[in-house]
Length: 94
Image (cartoon, rainbow, N blue to C red; front, side, top):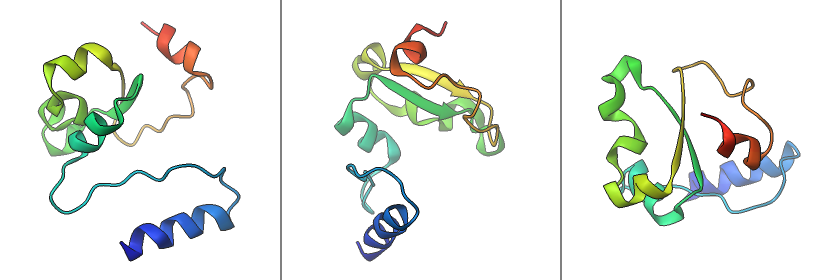
């Protein structure tokens, strides 16, 4: 838990807005965090270097959750700077 506290402090020091810091514990996968949060949009990289789509968080959430979550897939290490800034623009993406 100390690492989470350190990350939270570093974000504060560097001027990030306050908010909930989500993390997984040792018994969870990223898909567990996604299912717990149930976001409108999940930005997920294509995991090309570790096996591709089957390794993506989105691919590991339940079918019911995939129906509720819009996937925005980005190239691994491609960054997110090219994505729209607003949720409405993200959701409208094809």
